[in-house]
Image 1 (cartoon, helix red, strand yellow):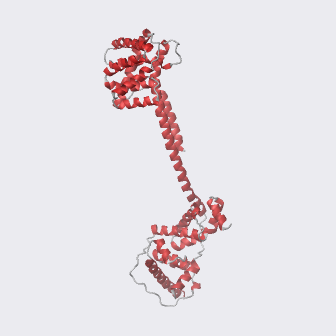
Image 2 (cartoon, chains in turn brown, green):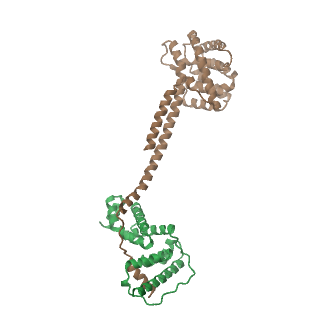
Length: 268
Length: 178
């Protein structure tokens, strides 16, 4: 028998081997067809979930930041709004010079006596008003001086974080403020920051100093708190938002909402 | 449905066409798998995997040669992959000399398909694979060497050893039949 004959025997009989797949084979084939599709769509879900997560966390982060800022602003603003005249409604930033002034002094003397602070701040406000009415330039110089004499540590962390948001600072200013929190400012930049501060003070209604003084005590404690929290933040300690007048319940409810959203996305 | 229609339908992923192709070719493909793999369940599994590959990669069919030939090649490759995993091919040239049967065995018509398949399955996986590819599928030694990642000499020696063993069995069955 030639080797080719053997080949032929097998080829003739086995090349078209009759075979019948089992009955459930087609079903199994369909099941096998699905996995690649499923895997692909799952990737889309994962990608979508991670993107939404990023967006949501981003929104949450910024809204959180905003509520912090707004909280600070609002609590400072409210007494002002109550005391100030309806004059000058087109400029809501007007209230701030006082705050800024008091801030500067208070923080400088935060651990000293409060009455002193008030007394000190009053002349400062006066001078601010005067200079405002006449010329802004001298005020800038004045403002720069006390700042320079102040504790540098305070400037670095407190002044930017407290002031720039309240001053309706533009985005770059905010950035600057953020940078300031971490690194000590070069004196030039400090002055620049102070210039920004003074320029925005076009407010002629510092007349209600007596009422302002009443509020000062409250503000002092609030500012102290803010200052304290800022320090905590810098030192990595726990920040008590409640003491800053920030509604933790609101944040919590937002958190809950976010969790629900996330769960939905994950369950998808 | 002719081949171009089938290919068009498969490319669109039409379930109807897939079912049609399955009905028409599943048996043929399973027959191929059964020659390479001893286990019926394994053969069916490999056939189904091959079908999935055919359906998913139909766009890679380049109209070189027949569509059926392309499908067979995919299923064969699937079977080879399975063999490599489950049944080591033992493609190294074995030293032991195989005595060629001398008697003249004919009467092939008397041999049932099942017996032939049985003989094929009793071959070592490497012999069986090369014999299948060369004698039944009609690939050249060069093609086989590429498919199995061996050299042509190995393919040739495996084939001759497979033939010798099969001849021995054929003669043996001849004798027992008589």
